[in-house]
Amino acid sequence: MTAAEQVLHEIESQAKEKGWPIIGPEKGAVLVDVVRKHKPKRILEIGALVGYSSVLMAANLPEGGQVVSIEIDPVRVEQSRETQRRAGLADRCLVIQGDASEIITQLKGPWDMVFIDAVKEDYLHYLQEAEPALSPGAVIVADNVKLFAERVEPYLDYVRNSGRYSSSYHEFGSDAVEVSVFLASEDGPSFC
Image (cartoon, rainbow, N blue to C red):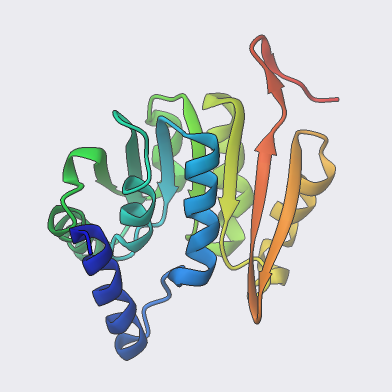
């Protein structure tokens, strides 16, 4: 078992005890599949919690890849950094403390993948803030789209009906993730 796998298992156990809303191994498998299939160089994670998903993604990144996480809670920022360090992946991860709504546009893209798991009502805002820095074919993964369906409805309507994304819904019992591929060419977004 790798250091990353060990850390992930520990967090899964702690999450049950402490009620941490991590993505978990079932939905997390979608993240792993996306990273392995699309081989993103740069991932923007919005909402880090304790670093579970950043480790999951960083462990599957191609050489030279990076996960940049935004987390508003300073305690969670330190927990995430410690998780990444213990997993041996700190060199592939950067955690920025602050409000994603204010930080996203200040970060330099391009983003090949975005993972959204923060304030549910702000999912659409987060995505629209990141859009100018998305690379062609960037993949957006949004967590909790069934559990908080009403709160993420504007986001789901946008990725499913704007013509800017090809989107798919992946259900896991009481929850689901939405995986959306940004439809753009090398010349810029293709909003057909």
